[in-house]
Image (cartoon, rainbow, N blue to C red; front, side, top):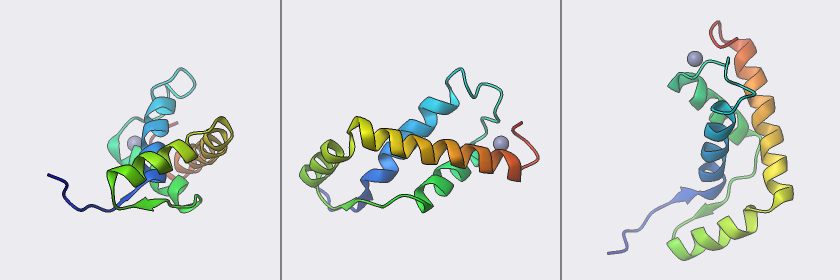
Length: 94
Ligand SMILES: [Zn+2]
């Protein structure tokens, strides 16, 4: 039942937050294509510490530790930084 896996909990959180921000009011004029979304995720993740886990229990523990208001705020800052960088680098996504 439990297949071994390797995942980055930071990535999971970043993906969720990027979605949330991109589909919010603030960035409704920003390009919503998959490429831009992935560029933002990659850019943000390159500036954040990864948190790799190999079990569901460890994933939940890491998620609890990472999911604090302070940490989410810090991650959001990196994402906003990444959105601006991606928006400048690509022709699309004003
Ligand atoms: Zn795009």
